[in-house]
Length: 431
Image 1 (cartoon, helix red, strand yellow):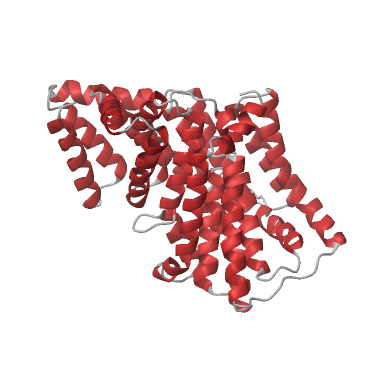
Image 2 (cartoon, helix red, strand yellow):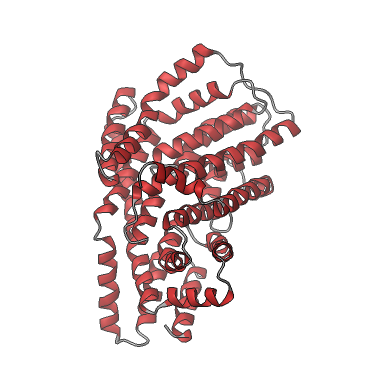
């Protein structure tokens, strides 16, 4: 790919996004007009269309609509309230206890549903009012809610990790799922540490004391929801079913659980199916158009050009990872996580593997990096979801968010420098 073609691709894509053109249209038009520089328009259009269709021709992709549907059922099935009660019983008499309840509940709900937005919305809508009544600062509690919700994109099941697996050419979803546990929990613990310091500084009220009977009762109530994690991951690790089959089992399990809780009826079910279909259509259209864009870049040997350029600068894999992560942090500010993973994985994965970096390790790094972008304006969808739920302007969340950005970056650097944090569990599980 010549400099002219690269320039056309980048400038056209950025210009269209700046003008407010939907990202799927921006991706398609950029790919089409770049290819049209050297190929006639009709063959170019045919090629782009074929690549879009081929991008969706994957059995693995079936996991995405199933996990989206399971997440929507959980969001409406009374699961959030039970997880909050369990988290509250666990936290006990810690100062600023409700913030910790929010963080733990977001981590659990995000992990079970696989959706950061669903976690921030479900948990935030229940706890925001209670925290405000007890004198908590809305800006900081919203910041903690938003950042802790991102852990659900690392702790399985995670649709983003499935998307990365697809973009990486069929990398093991089971290995990626297991690799996300430690980084996800480390992120959650880092957010808790900042929250505890903030709670001490502002003398927030303590939670209720620990009572074994309350902890046990809340655990029993929440256990059927938590069991989904064991069923899904246990089945994948034990080899009873694939990640795609696990997603269908998750839907069946959540339907039965919601009926058992008495939270699912015909009216809710119709709304859940409509919402899930809409979300699935958006995600799969992104997959299709991003696949076309990625093919154009691969066709023009862009990954090889970037790899050669980086090799001319350094042969140190850590420095290469740092350079790529700086670029991804900038990308995350302006682009949502799904298209970013689909577009930049085919570019950077060949580069990092040429430096001997494990693709599973890089996948966890990439997702954690882009999670920071979800909390960052001007695109930061999760930031706007959290602010909307709390009914405050997003600008009020930015200052309290700064220390949380800092600890997420520290965790990211730790994951980059210590690959074992991502790779130990997959290796232990035989992946």
